[in-house]
Image (tube, helix red, strand yellow):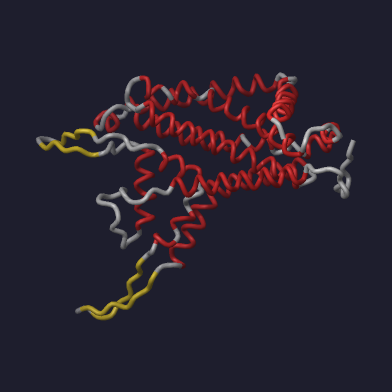
Length: 329
């Protein structure tokens, strides 16, 4: 496996994508839509008295736009690599690569690089509305770099998983569907499993008091917090560095606290409280417990690594078994 072989496959994939004019139109629509929604959100925040009361509207704008961009980007990512392998196999062009001196790993990583690069382009097109709060000083440059890096890694994870489905399944329509189901499982399935697991792992006690005997339920979220860790939204929010505390004036009282209108920080504190559970006392203040994002990101990266290995395995030649109804060349 060489970098030259990977680059060769990636360049061929990119040229194939650019041959159609639809990509330029779709990227233009994406740019106008995302940045237009970001501008409308900013206007709404500036018109909101609550947002102005607690500080600059750039803080809630930054977090809200990032959440929206992450979800939208992950929803379009399966279309970038969900048919990169079986689509070429159906067209009879995959065998052309397999009979060359290119190794299965070079083909797999080259196609992944092309899909991941396209996903990063869609992320770059959202930078005007994402970096607006950074330019006005509401959010630090370091925080923006961290969250953008995490988003780029999550896009690569979804590209790798979608490509693995493409290598595993014979029909492109089926692999794209399974890719979307995987994204749905990460975004919505993990919170659903957590909600189901909390009452199952809860502790039920009988308490005697002056009013009689009654039942008491204690939820041990510290036992099942790991179900939320792989969620891309949780990873993004918890990985974002905390904003510095700011002075809040309430009448004649002045005190320091974290910005209350920070979506990233608010979700991060909630998740860390869930990890602490009812009996957790590791953190000195609310939301200051152990972080979750490193476990979730590590799980997602392992998932991507396994997907790449599966893709390379399915590209090995000679091919002794051909899926029914699929031509080789």
